[in-house]
Image (cartoon, rainbow, N blue to C red; front, side, top):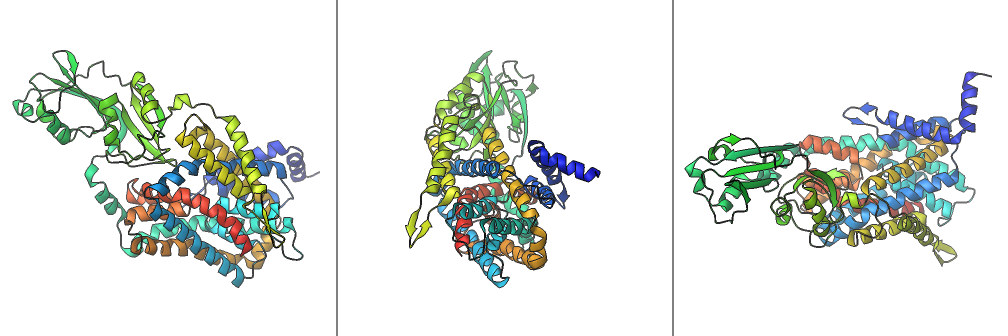
Length: 552
């Protein structure tokens, strides 16, 4: 027997081994770079599974369904807090932009599907692949499996599923590279310098923060430094995010705002780099930092959930002065945001803080759950949440003999949003730490993608031979048109600043790869604020779109 046949037989007889080898190879292939970006694990796993699909490999439908459920529920859970919070605050603009982008993409995909005479399901695969949105693919396939979509005469569920998967497989890489190319060329085409625009928005906070914890100390030796009040010195010298402490006659003191420094006073501070603005050296000589300034203080993450913290700025919370804590980073939807005193916190933001352990314990009552307190996942709520989503997906109303319902994808998404929102309002309910959520969502997604690739492998060559080149051109239109028209809509109608708008467009396309490129082009994380504004809405809208496009 040939070596190749032996290998294939071994892989077929050891499905667990094969699955994890495919996942591992997918991540390795995903590291391959095309220009400035890598393919990513989804594209990598898709390509590897497409190859094996040519040899008749399949994955257990039950395993793929479990992966699908984990992924969609986690997407809803992640979107839940932001969905309602953003909608309540500045969300109308971002909601309208996400709806506009999705609507344009759907229209272009439907028109292209009819012009190209794609087989039933091909349009859904085109939309999902070109917009690189796996929830759309998952929802479209589930609409077929659940029977809420009537199949054309002669079509089988397996055939339609394979058509959706093969169209998605052909257009996914096109969509990935297309969105990256579009957002990269768009600023040049319209004559906008992203870096300059981002610098303008950061003008109120010019100092770059190096991310390295440092400590410095100065002794007051200049009489001139004793003339301004403490309040005036804070405004002129201090960045308001780092901890600065005053020692007088060997004792730590908290001066009133209207007090003045005295000769011999010592200022000890710690923070992440340039926490003193220019001019601190004028107050006197730099001295050795007191050993009581503990740079080995605890480092942890805190989730914003308390009503008193949501909507307030870092400056309002005053964690440095009130608790002796330094905010090293703020992440929203997994993205680091530009750190400044005026940054307004939103529900489910994750703050990385450094400071005394005693002060960190106090944060649970000020901000929300502390990482050490939420190490475990509330598996009871997690399990019943998915069960609830599955039950919602089963519900349907018969209209003219046709069952109408949200399907499993819509049910899981709704349940996830509900549990995520409840956790944000009541942190003791439905605990699902970020790391646990990430691995379950990623693992579920990758299992689902492997199933899609194996399913499409046997038909992808035939699909490409029938409509491959035209499908690629259609994918370019589906990915580029929503971005270009979305930019015009965002500027002319919504009046969004260019830097935030381009970031928001990548969020509306749910493209983290494009977001990373925009941040690099802007030399700033300012665009991430726009990305997080539309991302939560887009995940929900595009999941629903996966079901709707099957009826088009």
